[in-house]
Image (cartoon, rainbow, N blue to C red; front, side, top):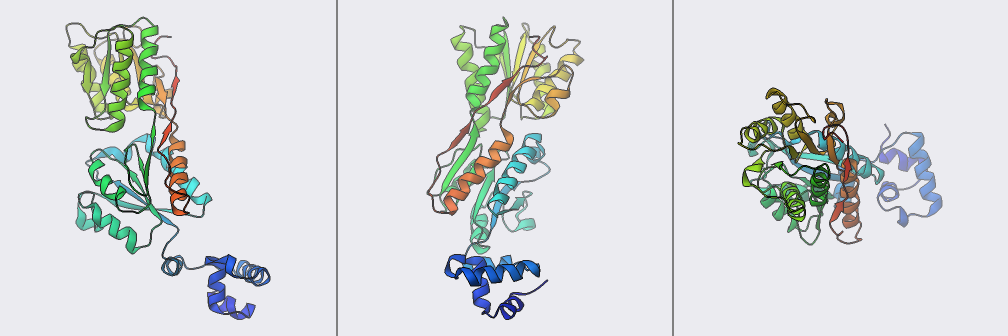
Length: 343
């Protein structure tokens, strides 16, 4: 691969001019810029990104802060795969790349941990990263506030943050949950339970709020024993369903705050000898791939998973280019009716 010096010699210009063509093209006249770009293309020249970052005090890298500790399985959730694809594709369209700043909960492994978010802020500045995308894995909300107040462009996923260059992207979780529960009431159910996400998780809290709103609007009794906490994963859905079915008056319908928990609940109902939807109606949330392939196929609330990534990329690019802080983005959801409710 050719070097910047070789390009300069072939074009009869200085190395500094070659650098400006790639870093500040508006400062080079059209004829010279076109000659340098033509020769660079012929020789497959690519500017050194590290040097570019140092000279411009900003790289084309966006840091992805994400706890990948195997003891905290959030990073394995299927919904995140589509989110990351949308984020990576949208950043690539702007010439930016994604750099994972992962921690496994042991700061010695990575030089920083979410217990010490200042370490990540310093790392971001040291490497001249353009900004940060923050993905909550369950208990990182306090650390995210440090990022939000740092002045580094930050976009959080599913965590409401505020700061001079900080915003967030989330779904309309309350409305999505309400649509699921309202569907169950229209089918004639009155004993409707919910399996929630972990306490303190913002999407989980919004989804239980949507559940309660529709129960009240419908004049249905809110029973404490019909609200069972899970963790968004399959095993907790099974355990919650076992607990609900052990009640003296078990529910006839269950809204689970994630498809993973809904599948677990389905397995729990089946193990108890119940048939879904004949004996029990079931609705999930997310519309991950498994929702359409289980038997019966799962009625669920679909999130725009690639749209999360695209919206996060758009927001962070606006802050990087100086267009200003973006308002929070709340993406709509859609109820997808399949077989698990009997409708």
